[in-house]
Image (tube, rainbow, N blue to C red; front, top):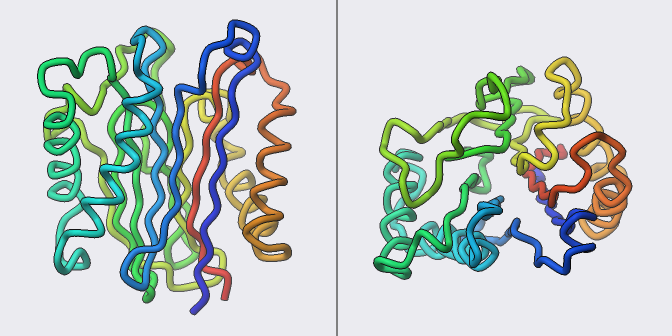
Length: 233
């Protein structure tokens, strides 16, 4: 079994114009013969959210690295530990650092655990069956849930296995997901898998970065981040 991961993040044109830092953060990292990925999107209304999102990706990595026997833990329990540690870092000042959080973990056998709180999109394909874990949003007026305020019931979680080539898990911030048509999600998923399969991690990241920088849909001004783990063979 061969598993590969890819990730990239680009600053939205509106933020570049206003000299605002990328409020998204991504991470891809090898952990205990497996790997983890994370996509976090700092709230635009929070002055230090770009730091909060970056810290959230680091917290996810450290929690997964330190936990014993991750394969037998629930995604919710892992998320709870990450949330607790993130809050401890900022103590009572967390409101200025608020962020969403999506993460996924895989061992070398293709066992997947993933979770999401807040905006964005979590997609999986397992046993060749594609699904969007994130429910369709009703509109742009909904209040964004955040890592600081999330209750247990606010976390979306999934456990599955990558049993076939083309299976995988894909995370993205709402700068991408809000522009995607539901009927095209699987094709979008496939395009990234095929690019990663026929090139390599470095070239796939370069291709993804180019695609995001040339995004041509109405919400192009937003930061855009994406990360995925795929079974190649």
